[in-house]
Length: 294
Ligand SMILES: [Zn+2]
Image (cartoon, rainbow, N blue to C red):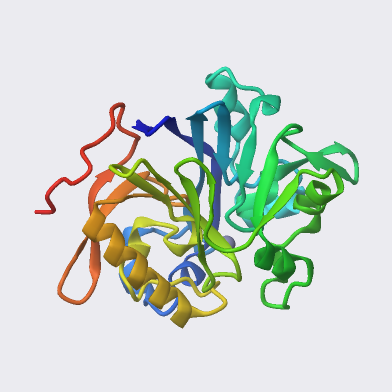
């Protein structure tokens, strides 16, 4: 798939599981368990799907999965599965080494999005995984991560992001900005302060990396909001605004955590939104910008 100068890839950096109730907030289990069957510990399967853009002299990654710095206990708690798919292997399959990556956008610093930003150089000393890359984070997200509130603390692990600052590879962004031609941030604050979604557009085709605003295809329904979110009402308002625009302009939404659906578009219903054009892999050609929702 191409957008403007960029060839677009989806890289699966492995799998993990989170509590189904926490993933769907106030939605009762009888409704979500049919769509996302839980295991014996009530956890549902989730992917960590990264976006890779190659073009214009850049190799750009958006989010980097859980990485490799976790303990056995942590792996068991979250059912981390990287037996087959890892970010490194995904890059390797395209002939890329970590040194080739020029830009890394971290939507936010929760471990399932930013864990792969660093790796252990030796026990207890983490270094940036991509030694030549500039890493981009919203300043307000950084501030939330280095002084976390008690409810969010377990998601922010300092070894995932402090080394980026120490190695001078971090660039702070403030709000919505076009960082590279056709690649712009869209900041939302309901899930965590200063989460940046990435919008890739050539004026004709638009793809939005929806991160934890819309972690799975089920979260397109307005009441389907994670209990993890710091402010559910803000998320609902941010979803409404974004989905209005996505429906109107035929955006492709890239889903980071959905175990099956990689891309979808949306259409407005009487009181809500629903997913259409669900794709389980990126199309080889650029899809038409406005397929009629019918
Ligand atoms: Zn998150």
